[in-house]
Length: 418
Image (cartoon, rainbow, N blue to C red):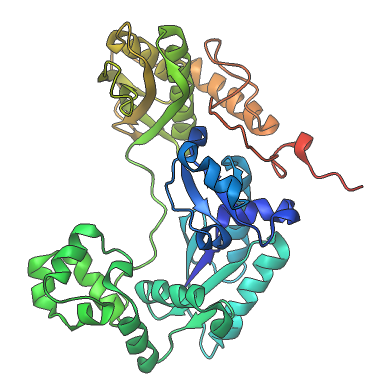
């Protein structure tokens, strides 16, 4: 059996854990730079605030409806997510973290278990230990556990947040209830093609022949169909090293001077290098991008990128930052107001097992230096050691005018009991 554990309105729920005054009130969480709505509480959905709403257009509406609008507090959300995932490991060793607020669990060897009771235990422990409400869907396959989770979320009064598909009757009823657009893994284009075949529900989808699905689509859709039929074909994903690592961000404001852009690129490159070392990889290629604000049609637009091939693989912050900064200087154009940039490292190889160049190699002093910097940054958490061309005060320069305290990751923001 598989379970999908999904945190309800995760960002809003994290805010409510430490600010009980927000409970049962409409909440909206904004994207980077306080741009648009990326998460809403159920109360905000009821009053009509749409997902993706640009806040500058909906400011008056939010005030009229008493919606509490907050900036994204990613350190808080990330820490709370990690706590939830650690709790799930108490129930089974087989856990696949699917997103910041979702995880699949596989129950191997759990014979004669009351899964409804077990699901309730999962919910109650997460709620008691973190304050985060969840829904749990349990079924014989991953795809069906997704369907079960939707039912648990849609009908909280009847299911109490837990729904188990453990019979053929329940499976058939759930598939007939699930619209084709709500099936996990079926995107917009596939949805249109299936509807053209009068396939409007998950039940309609499983009625299609295996041969037709394989010939018309791919092995992925065939596995999804088998999963919905109750035959487990989609297994838990193993944690694998990434083949490319990217750090791309929008700027807090538009920049038209090269020095500010260099500082941002250096910070992005530093982030990539840290991620490389974390997964014990080195890169052969660095890809740097720079683009103007495409939403401001009245301004001159410019988008450019540059690829740098290194003669030897490296995970050194010094080398990656230097190369990225040099690259962005060559694609920068005077008079353009830039809004977004990024650094992507590619051509990854294991740091301890790669081809050595006879004539060129990394400075041997870099390895112990990076090890020392990583150790200090991990110990002091707030990245105290930076390159000289980085802003010493902040890692990401984002507009966050409605930011709540970092209750769990910053000692200065810890709750004070009066």
